Length: 468
Image (cartoon, rainbow, N blue to C red; front, side, top):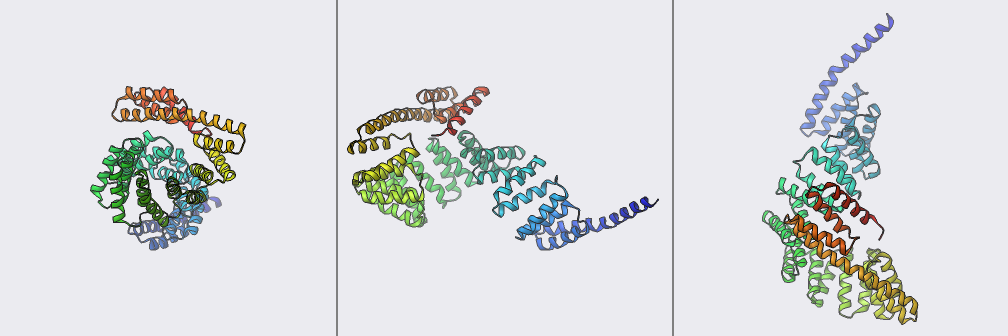
């Protein structure tokens, strides 16, 4: 009889405590819904004191502490909730978000992954995990999580936009394009998604289609400088330099501090051979953004075209301080040092350019010239031979790119057979062109030839991951 009495006593105590906990929980949720985080926290803390074994209450307390920026206390509560119930997915999710906000990405992602594992059909969990992967540069993983998230909530335009970004960074431009189109279809006023769509269209050689997207942005937001800047960029791709310059000057009229506009203005003026006009624009870009390595590089090229080799050396070294792996800057530094007569330093710069980008014939040939000047005839001959070999490959790649761009235009207009032919011609010219294999995969996928498409896609990924 004694054990039964103990069980009865415990049951009565739990029942007595259960009613006020439920009432407190309802009161806390009502305060939270009104935005009174401090009031809700006080109520949930009382409830947690009455029921200290409740993972749900510990999680609620942690959530409200996080809202009030008491992040470390919140993390402690989430851990306590997980100790009480390791299968309670919301605590893992909230813990992952709290770690992320605290900058501890290594702890954040495993917590979010556990939340997704426990509750795979919860949109927020997968979406947040996808964003976390994206932010740390794990783009294929991000694309996978975001693709699953949009399958759970296919009407979420911003999720499609994020999926597009992840796919684009993963190298899947074709699928990124589809994601951006879906985002814009769902949210026509999502200017970020429309800008991403326009920019990718330009990158795929469809400048007019991209410009159309940017102009729609300006219809909705006439002062959207990013869209206007991108119109200028697209016009440069079409070699319509005067119109591009007009766009960049309009951006600067609206915002005289826009460093990218000064940079692009300088680049367009340089392409028009207006070197004296380009120099001040590029210097202004550097003044506004000292970390803009490309502006130093382009200014250096402008000085080189003007025969000002010492200034070229100065700007290339500035670019390399910002980006030590800037292969083109090493090449131009070596070229300018050669012109200045500093042959040993030129050789070192050119060798570094070759190490970083062995597929560019220019550094090989310039190095060969210097070696010949120094009397190293055998080494010079070998460098010239390598330059010739690389040049042949480069010409094949250029031929392939022409066919790729033609194929993209055919693909965009739905001419699948013609697109397939162009991509196969590209592969014939350059068998190691990852882009050609990837786009051929897209054509085959659209044509319903899924096994062939997968084979081409795997080959593209293998080529992309191969060491250069």
